[in-house]
Image (cartoon, rainbow, N blue to C red):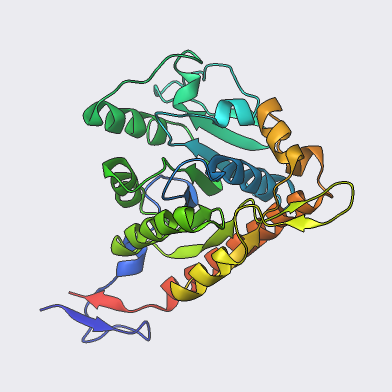
Length: 292
């Protein structure tokens, strides 16, 4: 018989098994794994993942890893200014490449920069397994996963196999992007992954000369979507040229211009992610236990 009880103690002298304990991250030594995801490409998902990972490492002094799970379009090597092939440990696992205090792994380290990755599903899943569990991550506080865009088999499998602590949804304010962001959030909810929040990227453009704000992709879309889907809007990242140039040059804006409005916005998102993970951890500790 299967019974559920609170964490107050044992019932009938039987052993307690915490369902929450079984749902923890599936990579040894990693405390939390979070996905940075979007329903579609081109909304700044990878840029967000990079700047949040670097902010977690530099500003909050955490041990952070960054996994580029976008097999068809790996961009982390460029954004993190890393181009060396990873070394292999004695137990035949790849050693992550480090920059800005973040340990990184990407399929982009293993293939030529301009080589097309024309792989079918089984090859993609094999590659994802290799750059996930075939890596000597060591002890990490947080592993940030830059997810592939969309809600297909790769995204679903990654969400289930990694046993994510939470997911961060990235979207621009325009309706067409928010429609796909909703799909992404619903996918995570179907596999019981908590939503850490919604980040509205390219929220507005502030003219560097006159200071006037222009809402190029619409205004307030992120807030409305967050309210309608019972999520929290945890960040509004402005559209600034320095973010783009930093990404192209391999210098995240939280490094190149840490006092800028954009860098501070990323840092605030990182802080809210830490806070939410702490809340979820406490909820798991206080959750019900399954008694066998």
